[in-house]
Length: 144
Image (tube, rainbow, N blue to C red; front, side):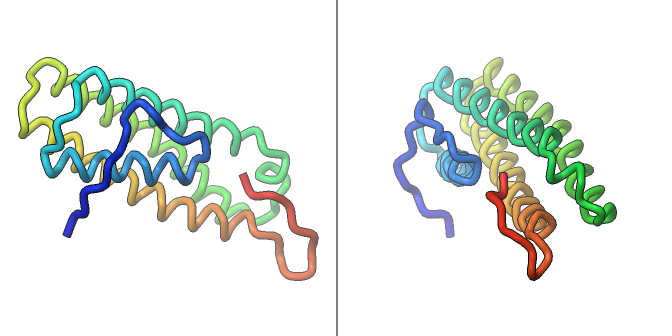
């Protein structure tokens, strides 16, 4: 069952994992037909898009991600990043539909897509953390 928690669509967190949780809750509220101003939803979609794209860029520029010899897992993580770029296009497309015809069905569709995307991002983060975890016996560094 979906639980409704208050979410300010104009207050996205800076931390990536918190951003994913924030957008998931916002999306859940949309599925339940929470009445957010359309402009606030546009702001939220843009902020989420920017946060995911920043995450992708920061991983691509990470020295650690480039040096790691485990190419198979790295390829999976990088492939996820490419898929998420396409998913963000789809998210913005869903918002444009709502923007042109704002009604409950389009809001629910945007919310449902947001929930699917955030669940995929959570799975990805688990894979990414496992990939970036140092092998046993090596020093630990902050994971992006």
